[in-house]
Image 1 (spheres, rainbow, N blue to C red):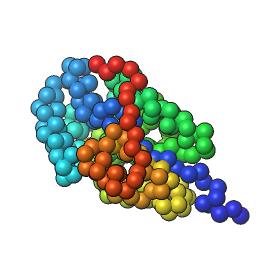
Image 2 (cartoon, rainbow, N blue to C red):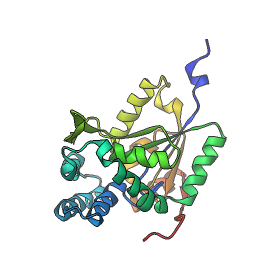
Image 3 (cartoon, rainbow, N blue to C red):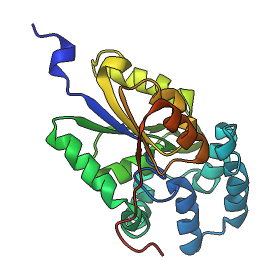
Image 4 (cartoon, rainbow, N blue to C red):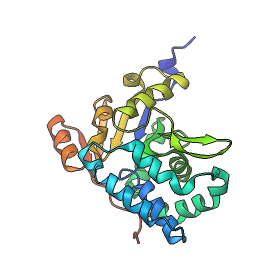
Length: 233
């Protein structure tokens, strides 16, 4: 029998927000809902305040997600599907970096498996994954009770070091070998992803923040500067 490491394709992992997409999909979702007439300005503003700590690396993700989910309490994913489609088609598709699409196609042509790993909610990430023809996604798992959104999330959360924990769990479930032998590439814009970037053979930083740019320069990592595929409103 062939060794699993020889039969599983190398993984090219991509962060989502500000890496594949020019923006943060969770925050954009709240803006989209407000445009659709939802009265959630207070939730949006509080989430913005918490997001301000993201660049400093000490964002309270549990508190953020609890706030973010408040407008969706008691709703099923099926109930949200029409809104999700409109959101992805009208708000996300124009914000996909053209170079991101090219990079995904490059990896597919090389026989690699594209994987999105994000600190955004799973049903958003999966919907955007479908847009990009990426079926394998790791994201923050929103808890459902009796089929509807319960207002909290499952652990571990795929944020900072939690991305490594979630990725290792996913690899085990997919019968992949350990992370260092499976995930050959990882693309990210944020210093919050330094723990995972340090684990892969071929890290690439995309439009990096200042702290990540400094770290990448000191390590000789590839730096990519990506624009957008179309005008963003």
